[in-house]
Length: 150
Image 1 (cartoon, rainbow, N blue to C red):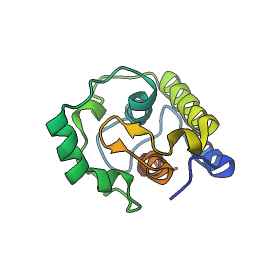
Image 2 (cartoon, rainbow, N blue to C red; image 1 turned 180 degrees about the vertical axis):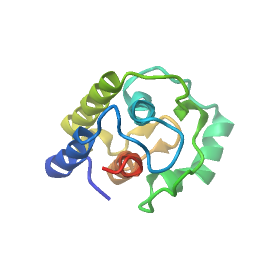
Image 3 (cartoon, rainbow, N blue to C red; image 1 turned 120 degrees about the vertical axis):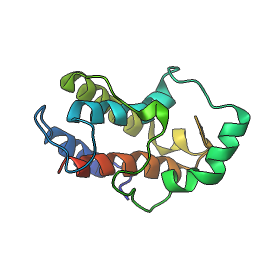
Image 4 (cartoon, rainbow, N blue to C red; image 1 turned 90 degrees about the vertical axis):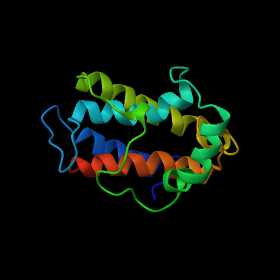
């Protein structure tokens, strides 16, 4: 798993994003490339924006028990795996806007560094280690960049 707090490894992720174009086609799934970028932005919106409602106690407990390990662990996501409702992007999006947002979020995460994230509570899973944060961001990005062949 890439370390999103490492300059070199983040540069590799950003290089993959730069290979995308508005005409990039998915190898699987239903999202177009702009929707995919918007979908990837949701992970960062949950950290940096007050845009999405927080789950209630029971939902957060269920997410920690049944979903957390899949999201923050080392094992890659499977193709066409289920997506949480807040991550569903069904409307059309602007490729350049979503790409710029994603690059900015990735750079902000790198800039803040692992110390900022180590022990920080996530929107849905409670307190995460720096490794869990990095795995969550890197695994999600890798899954969708691979989906689009980059």
